[in-house]
Image (cartoon, rainbow, N blue to C red; front, side):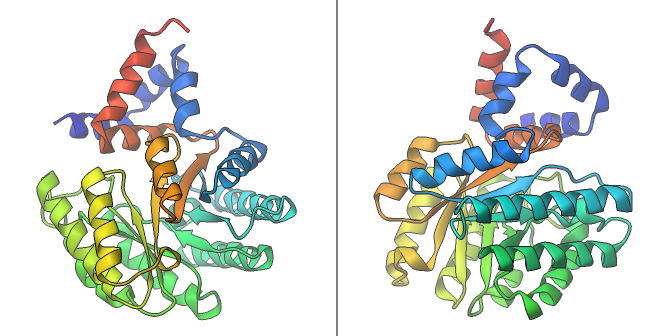
Length: 306
């Protein structure tokens, strides 16, 4: 119920205005978002890499409605990649890209062209790109664009969402040599016809999908903060004889940093998903919906006078 309420709020412009103007908002956003500018993203990346972590950077914004907005997002990624290379932060840092931010909703060819330009810049910078997955209506389009990009940029990563009923099959299709696949639970409101609705069903699907990826020839990227799923991931790595260089854990910026450091200390690769930009509202609300503990943090910020 709480998750549904938060997801509904994420689509409300009235709630967005209320949150954006509240005095506590800056402290809340600062925990989960690196900042508004490229320099903020580079600063956060330096800090994480210095702590032994890998990074993937997401320039926030997914409601692109014009070619000009889509091209501006592309250009920001090109600037970011140039900055990462100049700072010596690649290949530890890569980028995550939402195709909707590149024009997917109104011009799929434009989205592909922009994504291809970003992939070429990532190659030149010595790093990679991962295509974020969004709601189920874009899944086929995203996987089609992924397949085209991988012809010239085989390191391009995919994201699959365990709450979708189709995902176990998609994992089998993508668990091939050289294929980088991030497995997450999923953060969008989806109908029962296409997505599991209970947390238990989603967790069971996550484990099934994890087994497919860990037993395959690709490079699994296990994106979860769930202690039980992390423990299962560690167990599956031992079961399938995967050393730490053949898979990784991924977590969100600002969530469970102590666990991130524990895993790094155990010798695992941990990649932190770092968002930046001023379009933070939808991202923040989905993070609150994903994990109830985040709501408690938000509540403490509301009550604080600092």
